[in-house]
Image 1 (cartoon, rainbow, N blue to C red):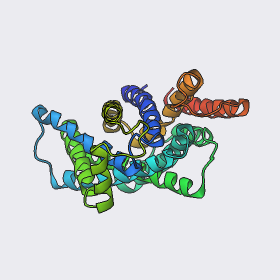
Image 2 (tube, rainbow, N blue to C red):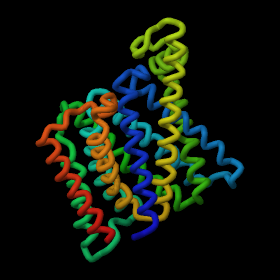
Image 3 (cartoon, rainbow, N blue to C red):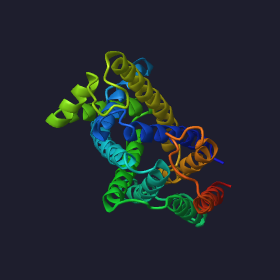
Image 4 (cartoon, rainbow, N blue to C red):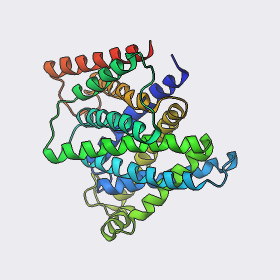
Length: 313
């Protein structure tokens, strides 16, 4: 098994925790609107400035251009994802996004990188098929037409963003690729402030005037709510940052289509968390695990495991 597979699995374990926190944040109105949360998530990439002492150099024109395009596609992908998470369960939403993203990555890899799946013997294609099929089947598709379109759009943008990151790392070393791509995220976040309605909402939220917040508006309660929000959002960003670093290491050293296909392992982790903790943490696992749903998700998880071993055993 290639060493970069371990990076993917660790990254997707962390991503499972991140997506459950994302669902909690947007569904419980910890922030007022998904676009505000997308702003916070993108802007907090500014912590990448901490890598400056580790060999950051001025980028090439290609790195700048592809970093900006990747940041735009990433911003759209998380915005559409958060819009869906606001009204739909994480275990339903994320597998569909991941399935679409995996197919989008494969197509984008062929068009942009002129690469596809490794292993011309056909094993990779079979395993890839099982991974994607498991990803799609693990969701029950309990969506409105609008939600489904949001999910498809999110998956397409995620896939393109992943391939563009591979392009960036082919042009720059890891530190520079990481730094300039994260700085582009900050630029895109600041660009959101040019939209008057978004600017007003973010300003009100930073001032602690989120009228939909789940805690009372008394001074003590408002301060407590602000501290709680900062803790949850920053903590989740730290987890997301660690996950992103592991995934980037895998993208840099492995096949980007397979890396995205292994997003399927994230849904296995979400499924396991839901089975183990849905009674203790109903805010995070707000779904009823009926017998037919359990069997359905178990079948999908089995397909994912089969796909994993077909590709990598």
